[in-house]
Image 1 (cartoon, rainbow, N blue to C red):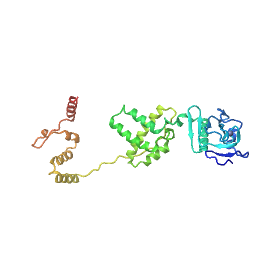
Image 2: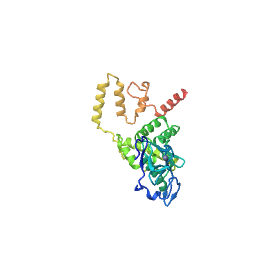
Image 3: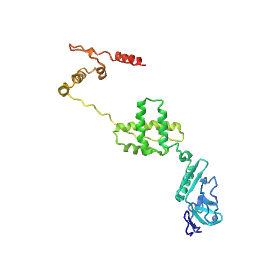
Image 4: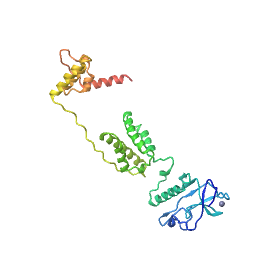
Amino acid sequence: MQRGRKKTSAIEYNSNFVLNYPNACSNITSTVNSFQGGVCMKGSIYTDQRCEICGGTLRHDENRDGFFCKNHLKIKVVPEKCRVKFGRQVSRRFYNYEYLKARQFLEGLRFKTIEGTYDYRDYLSKNPLGFQNLAEKWLAHKEHYISKNHHRNIKREIRKAIDTWGQTNVKAIGYGEIQDFLDSLKLSSKSKSEVRSVLHTFFTWVCRREKSVEMPDFPEVKFELGWRNIINIETQQAIISEVKRISWDINPKIWIGIKWLATYIAFRPNELRMLKESEINVSGFFVVPKAERKKAEADYHAARRY
Ligand SMILES: [Zn+2]
């Protein structure tokens, strides 16, 4: 055992040391970049740390599960910092003697390569397949094609998902994740169904753009539209009388408007809103100008403003 070493934990190599990866590593050096009988040996782990005795470079030895200096082959070193390199694209650093994590990360990449699911973009620090990155890209794209109101709505819905998933890789978001997310929302089933629909549109866009992403299954969100309250004529009349009693002194228009809408059921609220006092005959009747004419007038006035 080496004593007084600060930055390394060095232990003498023990010949009885049990190899963790006997099948994968027999007779193959750590940097071999090939498949052998379903075994992927691509990638390796590196460190900038030097041998504390002679200053020589430390090389990773998978068979002995550690780093060794070629002049001191019996001293196994676990460096404070190391780096996994896998092909040209992936390079990830590990700190605080996290050699074991580095090792697991490398094995994970190799496993995915054998499995055929390895995609280097899943491991880039810029994270192009991160949920938040893609969601923001989608919002920016949508801005050119939909109304401001609609855009504000979908932004509000997708924000809820960003708060939950952050930069999780979109490929890791499936049926279960979507269901848990929808269940966690404290919303009515109708609002949940709207969030679901926004997510569905987003994922459709992602899958069209990123061929390696598969469309996840979406859980159903069932909802029923609420019924309007229907009251009988007596109750209706009682309500209208009460409205008259409490609002007459404030403004008689409140009561008369409600009374007319209740009496003339073909009379639309918007037509009432556009009705002018001059169009009401004081002898007790009024003719509602056709909504089409009103709309044409409104369009005419709007056009004049530009
Ligand atoms: Zn050395």
